[in-house]
Amino acid sequence: MNALGAKIAITGCGSSIPPQVITNDDLSRLVDTSDEWIQTRTGIGRRHLASPDTSLSDISAQAAQEAITMAGLTPRDIDLIILATSTPDDLFGSAAKVQHLLGASNAVAFDLTAACSGFVFALITAAQFIRTGVYQRVVVIGADILSRWMDWSDRNTCVLFGDGAGAVVCQATLREDCLLGFDMYSDGKQHHSLNLSYKGQQKTLKEKVNISQGSYHPITMNGREVYRFAVVKVPEVIERALVRAGISSEEIDWLILHQANQRIIHAVAQRLDIPSEKVIANLEECGNTSAASIPIALDEAVRDGRIKMGDIIASSGFGAGLTWGAVIFRWGI
Ligand code: UT7
Image (cartoon, rainbow, N blue to C red; front, side, top):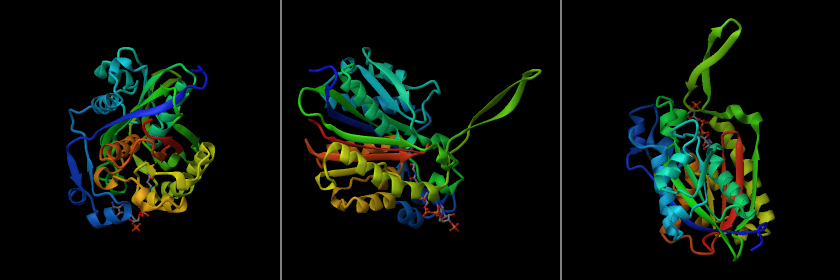
């Protein structure tokens, strides 16, 4: 195998979804909302929430272990772990903790932050390490526990998000390159649309030396702006990734978008002329799990037999930053 030009196979997937559930009706007892509003505007029925004693590292390691097992590997075979998350247990990062929990003693691990685009960005990043021949077996995890960063009195956001983790294993292969095409973007001009931002107060350490002390504040989102951005940019980025892959949208077997809103998923599928039978969605059960939503939906569809070996999947993540990206890949060769 040529060091530059190694091919990529995506050989395993896994997920971890916390058992605690909160339904739309439950939420209607916390804020002024209704099951009818949430279902019709978003497609979300319930979401799973991490308990206080569950860490982001725990669910990430569980999802990764499932993916490693499906790939027929052990944690000691893994060279690199990329953890896409915006909600690490520790601001310095949680990937190394995940490495430790897995016992992946031969791997290097780091966090990557790109909000709801995180999994797609991390998968593309993993592919570069494999293509250059540096690493052969990489675990990519998308995980978030946004329930810890929600204003549970804000009906605009608290009805949307759930917690969870999903993972895939990417391996160097001598056979076909299964990462067929990708594209990714960011636009900081729209940064204000979706935030989980640090806010601090001035503290004076000595004359003319001031610092800020504070913490991160719950999520704020301009839903309409993000919605408008998503329905325009997501089909565009998928079309560009398809061009790079050299395939047409008819050749896509499955569309797995970031699970933000059923109406966004429907609009994007329509724009790309992808029939609803080819669209994978699990919003009803999980809500928006941020960086975890794509690998959780993938894992579910692989394990229930919908996605079969060799199927072509188009996937797109989008969200805070604003960031967005798409990846076209063949499952499991
Ligand atoms: O994962 C990151 C990416 N995130 C996204 O892609 C989210 C994109 N945005 C969306 O999915 C949608 O904009 C939302 C689901 C967030 C909101 O749906 P919408 O149809 O855009 O509603 P809206 O924000 O335009 O609000 C319509 C009305 C408002 O009332 P008025 O001003 O018309 O009286 C809201 O106050 O609905 C009200 N509203 C609610 N009512 C009941 C907002 N949230 C709720 C709620 N229950 N939970």
